[in-house]
Length: 75
View 1: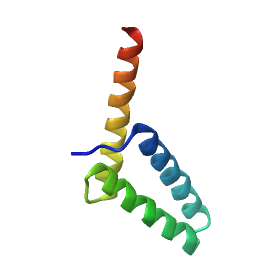
View 2 (view 1 turned 30 degrees about the vertical axis):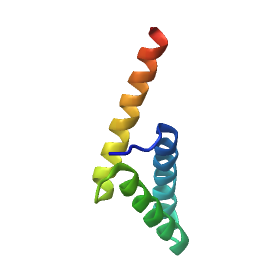
View 3 (view 1 turned 90 degrees about the horizontal axis):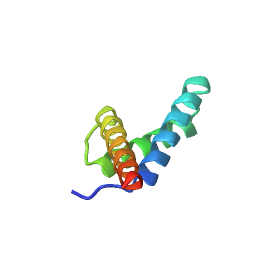
View 4 (view 1 turned 60 degrees about the vertical axis):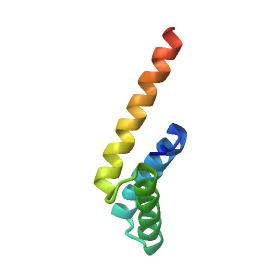
C-alpha cells in the first residue's frame, strides 16, 4: 500500500483539527464543506473508509515516522 508522506499527513491533520474548531464555533457551510474535503483526503491518504479510522491511522503513521527519524539520527 502506498503511504502519504509524513509532512502531508501532518498538514492534513492540522487542517482537520483547525477546521473542526472553526465548524464548532461558526458552523459555516464553507467550513463544513472543507471538513468533508479534508476528511475524504485523509481517508484516501490512509486507505480507510471513515474519518475516525483515518485519524487513528494517520497518527500511527506519523508516530512511526518520528520513531524512524529519531532512530536514523541516533545512528
